[in-house]
Image (tube, rainbow, N blue to C red):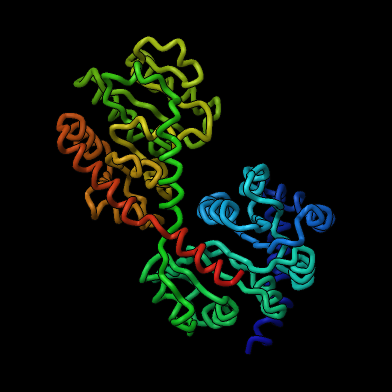
Length: 425
């Protein structure tokens, strides 16, 4: 049956995907960037592969995009610090590739070639991995099958399988059954995910529940962040700091009116807001929302701070450090489509507030269950939550402690995954 699926995949599915991608590229700049970036993929790979130390084992990590790569980083860094290995990193998404080209713990960074059979065979032949690690869910059948033919061990790490996953639909399930069986081991985040993979007939002894490396990642970053101060402590000394991270306009439509009302009753509250896309237009829109009522200042101009009530973050890459200054946090995306990373705030032991759109985040749901997280559905509910947190110090500290406990008890996946890789290499 596997031969039948390989024929169907390569004769029908791959050509159809190629056409769809080419058409989509006309309208989508990100897709065009990915196509352009792959034009010299094999020429660059051959040259860059020559720089690797052939006396060391080569471990290939594949991530779809930047988010999945964040989950790979704790594993990669532990491997580089404790074992003599070459690390090859590949991405499907241009955002992952472009934002990670200078990652210091990787010896070779590349795009993943499109999943045609000949490209997969050539990629494996050039890279020569001793083991491959696929992160979360981005698996490419021809690459997986090519490694199976060459007896190269493959792991699926931080693996998830939702109850209502489309992969469980009859025909799709049959196809994936013959992909998953090529993995030497599947390391899942939870018991639910483990059960999900067993439904595909995957051998139970090859499944292990290890947890989620995102917890290790945010915890390690928080330790480093505690020695990094982006904002002068004198500015924050007497303030009650609300940090709103990765906000979209839909989030701000709820949050900003609430903060205006909150500021009228409490002169000590300070909002630090980091929009998901800090474009000039977006920054000016936030400033205009407060015009004539409250004064705002951009983070880059903080040397001129004179007790403004709003600090607008006009740069990227600092949010995870800024959460260290929070007394409470709001995580954006939750009034738009999908909530962003709630762990980045929770790790600092602060109450975490978010809107209703959290279906993408088990962490947000679990934070609500532990009482460290609070789901709000609108302005009135958000105002009540924030007012109670900033008025009741004991309540705020109790909820913050629950957030930290939740993150801390889930640390340790990296060590388990590292042990599985060590068994192979």
